Image (tube, rainbow, N blue to C red; front, side):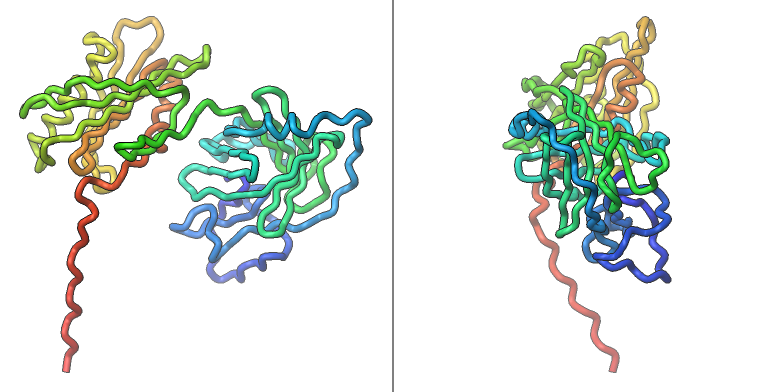
Length: 359
C-alpha cells in the first residue's frame, strides 16, 4: 500500500540494513519501504523497518514575496484522505490507498493505513520555496518533496531517496510518488461513558428510546449523524443497549437480533424490505448482517447494518442512503468500530498447573 511496500519478505533473503538504499525493484513504489511482516502490519519495527535514504536535492528557488509560513502550517492541520496515487506516470488502483489518511498535527504527521498500526513522521514545511517544499522525517531519515495546498485539496509529490522533485509529475521516475488528498469529514469519536470508538462524518446527535424485547423493554441509546456534503446523503446510526443478561444463543439470540432489525425498519419506514440477512461470528462476537431496501424508490436506497452482541451489550451499526455510497461507507464505518472490553471481561482465568514430569 502507499508509503509501505506491501511485499511478503523472502525468508531466505537477508534483511536490508536500516541505513542502506531502497530495494532496487520494489513490487510497488513507496516513500517508506516498510515491508509487511505476516501478522504484524505496517509499523513493525523489529523486523523489516523503515528504509529511507537521505539525498540532498537541488536548492529550492525562493519566492520574492514569500507567503506567511503560519498560513500553510495552520491550513494543513487535520485529517486528509488519499483520493488518488500516481507512480511512474500512471495512476495506482484505489485498492492501494483505500481508507488511507494523513493526519497532520502541529507536532507530527501520522499515516493511518487500513487496519495497520499508525506510522508517525516529523514534518517540515517551507512555503517560501517555489514550488513549496515538505520534508518527512523519521528515525533520522528524510524524504524530500513538494506540496500544493489549495482549500480542501492537498497534493504531495515525494521522493523515496532521490533528489527532491521539481514538478508535480512522476513520469519517467521510479523513486517518486504523487498523492492527491482531500480534507476528510470523518472524525474519530470516543464515547466517554460506554467506551466504544468509531469514525464517521458530521457531529453525533444522541437520544434514548425503548427497544422492545421479549423479556421487556430496555433503554437503547441512539447516536446518529449525517454527512454534511451536498453530494452525499448518508445517515450513520450507532445504537447501544445493555441487556439484563447475556442470552445463551439460539432462539434467545435470534429474538434480540430480530428486535434490533425491527428498530432499523422503523427508522427508515415500514415499506422497506429486508434481504441478504445472515448470521455469522465476528471473532468471538455473535453478529448478524442486514440489508433493507426501498422497493419503490426512484433512487436505489438501502440501509446496511451489522448487529453485534458483545458481552451483555447489543450494538447496532447502520448506514442509510444511496446504494452506491452506502456500499463503501458502511464497510468503512464497521471497520472503524472498536468496542470496549465486554462487561465482566476483567476476570482472569486461573493458571493451569503444568503436567507432571515423566520419571
